Image (tube, rainbow, N blue to C red):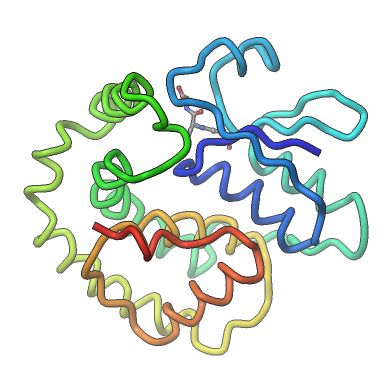
Length: 212
Ligand SMILES: N[C@@H](CCC(=O)N[C@@H](CS)C(=O)NCC(=O)O)C(=O)O
């Protein structure tokens, strides 16, 4: 099966995670950020992820893709969790800070969706509309990292002894993966362990090596 993605896209990470967790063969296709034609041809609009199923039809919506793939073989892995589970509540509180820190840095990272200058510029344009000017965002890094240090210590307590996989991981890991592009974030021990374990189990690597 083929999955159309942007590497930086947290929704695409969700879809990639289930391939790794279930050891399903995956052909990844990285779209350029300014390629409107391909996704529009496949599903009628510019959005990722898009799954091309084995019989050839296309499917959008990350969690629909996750549940579809989870149901194909073996026991169901992605058991549902409550929308107010401790991890979901933590994520709601930390999500905006994670985005504010990671989006401008992802914009300068070496990623396949930015293989041309025009594609990189399209990302900057789209995300400036969503989050504001990148230089302005970067100028607030120190205060947001301090805020996040406190939140990560709270997360550390939630992740102590965590071994299972459930729907909460499909919220949490994509965000922590985005955050790994940010240099100098102090991850407490359980959060570090979680990120490293999930990177291996899902085969969706962190950005640690190109953190900036
Ligand atoms: N509800 C969708 C959201 C997907 C989504 O918003 N993807 C973003 C990339 S992270 C996107 O394609 N945005 C439109 C664009 O690139 O122009 C899902 O869960 O799959």
